[in-house]
Image 1 (cartoon, rainbow, N blue to C red):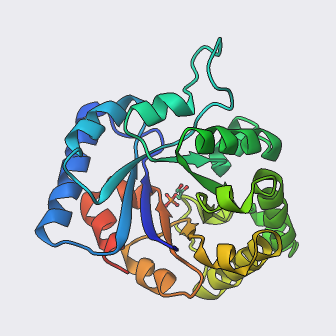
Image 2 (image 1 turned 120 degrees about the vertical axis):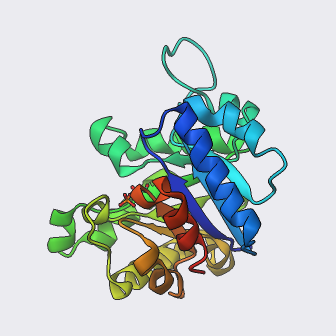
Length: 253
Ligand code: 13P
């Protein structure tokens, strides 16, 4: 079943003490005024996962995600983190193919397909990111660009495996810029993505998949975005570093 999800991607921000404080504040705000029916995911740096897992062990609404995983099972890959390690640290979700990793670390769709496999084999839900740069949007080829990212990264999966994948559409021109996709742009793209997924996995599977929006999502625009028919939540960057803003976004559903 399609889930409503709000995930906070902290990127490379917050030291451990700050991360514990931020998580505690989010948990307290949610406990004081519960939000029903929304899966809340905190996606901190790797170094914080074990401590945050302990902190959240009695919390059944806030889950943990990681920002990346390696494409191999285990072995001589100095500095890398496997999906199995994440699972054993209490992680349920892993962000795969964030545009920052595609751009700064040259992660290709083909590599990301293998990371998706690793995540699924190890019982993690991949949050597979896609999204076009401004030049592609301006040349009006954004749909094809995103469809290719999705086909290359996910279309090798069985329908059953696809049922465990979350999609995040994050137009690069909206990430960290303060410029959000308009409601019309977001709905048009999310609907197109869902149709593309349906062409491979069928209407039911596509209809049940959660497609999150990311890119300058904040308390002032979350309500409008989350009300859209094909937007099932958000992947939040900057605003997830502030507990009140993050919880306001969660309450926008
Ligand atoms: P911002 O919300 O800071 O634009 O970042 C979005 C993002 O990249 C989340 O993964």
